[in-house]
Length: 260
Image 1 (tube, rainbow, N blue to C red):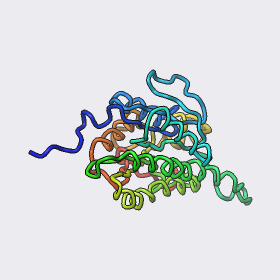
Image 2 (image 1 turned 90 degrees about the vertical axis):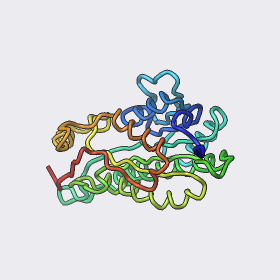
Image 3 (image 1 turned 30 degrees about the horizontal axis):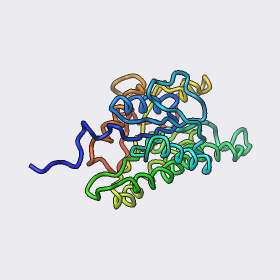
């Protein structure tokens, strides 16, 4: 029987995995899961984690700043080696209607959500991919894996979520064209679209917005998702070479109505 290019046992051992937004929530859970499977994990975030797990490196970086991200990824290469896995989890949620009491919303609010969620994702991708390509020594093996965090709001965006839905729709929409483009180099690109999860982002919403979010629960299990369940899917994607060019809804079957 021919030998596979890699196995689940050695696929991550010693490899460099970068998680943006890795200081908390879904990103922190993904960072812990990757580290537990042998990866050298670097968590990028604007603020230091409250309780950084031992063995996970932390680096300050604003994903919306192109020069800062270029410098961060160069430091990662120098200190740890070339990136092999990139998980984009950095994101912000800023609910608000486009027209409020007859007045136009401040454009800067919409721009900020796009800058972090959408442009921040491609910013990290453009910095990580050259390292993956350069480090590849055998054209028959995988060079790297990129995972974008979208949201079910990309498909079921609710009233007041125009900015967030647009940003996450972009994160989802770039998955297939990037998988087609980067497949030539042995790089897979996937997306995860979580439903309602218990994270600092959702728990930190204004009380009215938080009530709306958590009143939407899937048919089963009838609860919000847990960050470790997101992290489990991250590992499944990394270890399964046939997962490519697709966005997986992780929502328990939830379909959001126009408003709650």
